[in-house]
Image (tube, rainbow, N blue to C red; front, side):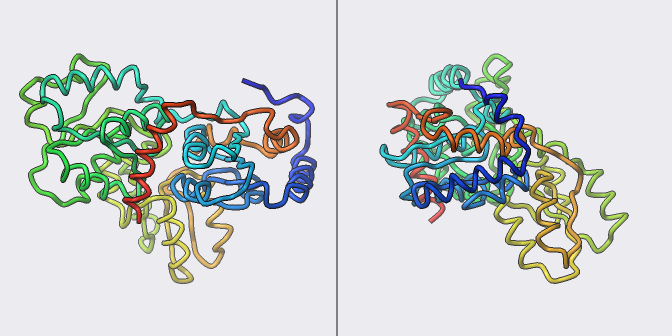
Length: 355
């Protein structure tokens, strides 16, 4: 793994920005810079497209650019590589920018669990679905076992699809998104159980496995589990006009207390369409909330509580300048076969479910 040289680390933001703009001008349509909503404001400012992980995956898939620089966390660059052609090169400014949520479900834990569950249930009775916030190996696992990937915006469609094709569903790696999605389905009587990989058989008895309809892997996003019910209650007390909107990776109790819950793209659209003077408290990554407050000064927008993603913060103007001036030589993200083609199956199903 290449390390950004000191010569780039010592650049001021203005110097790095100037060098990025020169590289963009020189490369023209050969280059596409994607910036996730949670990136620092100065990084989003130099991106050609901004969005959530799903939206940016679609941008990558639709692009003809030869070089795609993905300013987000590592699994996002993996998804972009899987969805683009062999002729395109995906680059990540800082390969150390991982995702703790994705880390909750490594393949060496998932596969033995799956084999045990199939032993108990019998083949063909459960469909695996992974949140797009996961590594390529887990997406490939779902692809080769008849499953799919999903986003926070189409998880309910993926759950419905899975439960229509088999009796049971196993969802990775975010327990909270899973719980909130089951509730959104509105199907009474679905039995949900958490599979804890730290415990033998996930902490479940054979009878519990047989009775369960939806298995949820025990994992969470530390950014969104920071928000607590008391934060919502405090906002209600201090600002009775406030509309509280949160991401569905938050605890179920927080989502229940909020006025709305949705993906980062949903939050953006909600803020954009809200009337002037609206008070909106948002439970998601603070860089996005701060940027929305700047972009919509006619509305009172503020964080439900301050929660920063330190991995998103690892992408800087200096790291972007480095990869642009060494294009194709450093931090190239290449998912190997057969993981690439198997993960592509899961991601294609995700895109079809969003249609």
